[in-house]
Image (cartoon, rainbow, N blue to C red; front, side, top):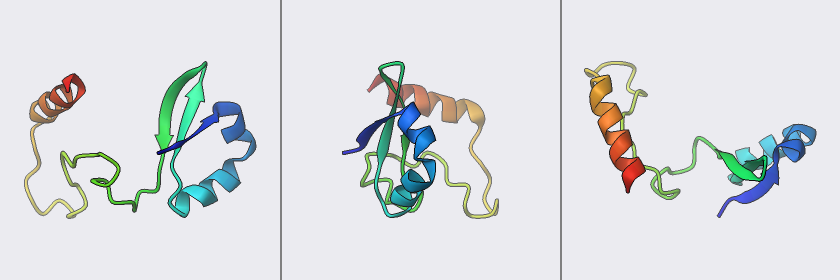
Length: 81
C-alpha cells in the first residue's frame, strides 16, 4: 500500500524520498487533494504491484514491436476494467 504524500512534501524532501523509493517504498503523490502519480522503485516486481506488462522494450529491440493501435486498445481495455 503506497504512502500518501503531498507534492509540497515531495519537493521539500525529494532526496530522502528518492532514497526510500530505492529501498522499495512506494508513494502516492497528492496534488490539489487528488492522487496525481505513484513513485515506485523500477526494480520492484510489477506483478506484485498489480501492473501488467504490455510491451517489454528491454530486449534491445531484437524482436519486432507491437503496433501503437494495439497498445492503445490494451490500455483502453485496462482502463475500463
